[in-house]
Image: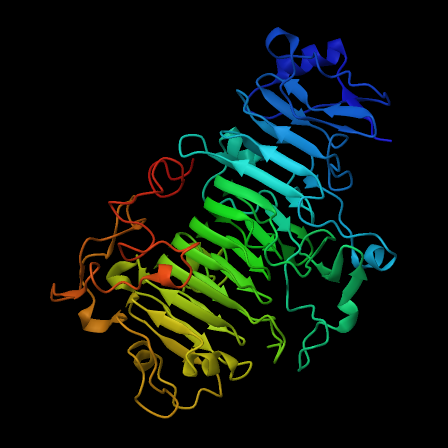
Length: 563
């Protein structure tokens, strides 16, 4: 039986008197009641605005502490998920603060599924709603938000009232931009496909096996792939599923190592389907990745990553989604703007779905930082642009990759790696992978790695191919590489503070001041690929002066830098 958390009159008075600086230390009285006795311990007129839910006939509700709402482990924790039909966190004067994790919905693992427990499908689990302007704060570094399969999150902020997920130190005003991993992050587990599981129809030797799928009454094939963090499962056969909505959401200071050797990301999307809406979401100052997609087909638009410790956008396991309007800015530590894999170190020959991201209008600003050098010791690798490897397919359009270091100094700004086998290069050669209307302006613009590349020429591939048998003609057009003496003295990315530009300049010029890319005529109309998601672009990159969609709700690009 769950316990209702209540405060005695004396402890309530002491706690309210002790509140200050945003730190809350409670010693609750756990009362094994079957009624809600916490609805009149603070707030206007004695009302309690804190979230509540009803389960097994009992009501559970958070505690009012000054202007804040506090939720002890008896309300929700990693060992005590909310499994009621609904729970809502409304706008309050203060913050919603959690003593432990916020776990939503029942997790059905492979063992339970094999024993006959039905795996919840889209909308069958708990629905979490978070109102615009709400700040969700986590006191323990190992705490995080987890949405189980079948459950959904509806966090819909606005430009003037974004929703923030952050750590206690941030609210106390002591967190700086160097403080990564102060809490876990946001993890959503869906019923979408992952090529770590397959149904036996594929050839090759991936890690998946027929036994990874469990026949159930409500889904013919359900994959039960283990997620990062504490034990949880994701996967299924429904790439169109909806795990909810994230709009105008900022996730800050995330990425704690929840279990040994296993760090979470700001936003982890495991097997999340295309029915989910991810729009205007920022990852700021993370220990690991900004956004990571393991399988599924979720689409993302208007996403921002600033100061990720590892990759800003990472994907694998047969992810087949689309991204339009993405801004990535490397600052004190980073690895790659994009890292695309297929099934990890195993290429998954013949196993479907193949990993294939289609991205348009990305701004990738690298920093020239080298791994573990001087003050940049927190970086997990060299600051680089997109890397596509391990059999991954990709399509990249209307994007700019450059550097904010002096002289646009960089490590590789676009790399194809076939170290694990020829599939990545094969996809480029047979026109499966494509790139058009991109500008790369860096001292090290391109790189090809691996032993099977032959005479494949990435520069010529970007220009349309046809130089040799290993680089046959293709349909790539309007790609521009600016490097060496041709690099302009001025940045092609403007706005922001100091080196934190994020808007594409009106003119793309070389070192002689000559325009080299016409934003009026050289763009690729990606709406012809999928008009239901892609908009016809009107400028290169993720944002410009005429479309500064980041203004007012993002952090880390304009003063103050350490909000």
